[in-house]
Image (cartoon, rainbow, N blue to C red; front, side, top):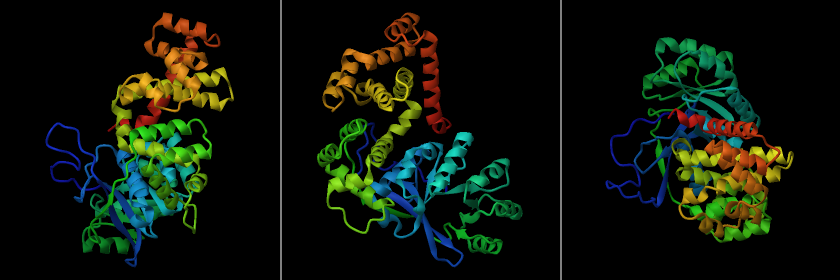
Length: 436
């Protein structure tokens, strides 16, 4: 549900000066009830809020969703925000394609697809996959019969009809098209008794709007691990660590421990007992979920915006993918080598992303010796792959031929093709941000 425009003013954490904003001590989440035909509470829609004021200033849909999920799971907890009810969360293409949504227990959540999302075959496949996993999907802000609506109806479970924008004379036709597909009808932006009467007579199953309740703003103290701690954790996860290694790293960062335990309690593990051992919690959650959580925290810290606007972030992602693809050609079937090549590409630019000299950054992180030597000495296959990536990025023929001499499996055209494939991969992953 699209929030109303706020009055002009400063966002939470901003000052009138040009200084860096101070990270606020508290986090906020909007919550608006969704009712059934009997007036009973059915679910809550969870909304991004930048401060205690009951409005949202959203410049990036994907980042706003990441913030909602981070605050819901990491800071507030699922029980405090939703109780026993279901939750609706707005998602754009980036979030639909991301593993981040899988942090949410699927039987508790409806993924509400924004009206700005452009569908293609990859996204249709992803929607089918999410529904098989147990998520319900809702189509947001529908107000008229369109070819897009007919195309998307088979992919969703719930359709939210916008009562502010939908002409009353078109409502019967719109409802008829949706009922043919046996979808649940939700009337949103119901703001008057007349709207409610119309929706009831039309047979809507669910209702939401200011007529029933304005969104409530929930407040919780912020729990934020440092960027350095998250970086160390991601490096460790890339090395397929033993439980004892994860246990030791998490013990160094109490806020990460708190986030992990919140994640455990918020996920669909069905546990009826309290987890008192950190090692036990790690074993239950699993390293894949922890990796997703660390990625989410980084995304919610603003890195998603950099994917769209920062050429350095684009270079980092494209280089990492190039090295992964090239590693797959060199050692087919060796996923460990491909994963190591990818993280080497990421860390070849991490000193620029985080500031400082590469030697200083690398020395602070528990990076594999092979990765370290590739970064600092251009040693081994990883070092040669890094040289090939840089040569391809430069487009200089002499450098490309020199890289091929180091890696005889490749011809110059091979490296160029891999570079184009890596760029296309990156573009596909941020396509949902490009139009904003």
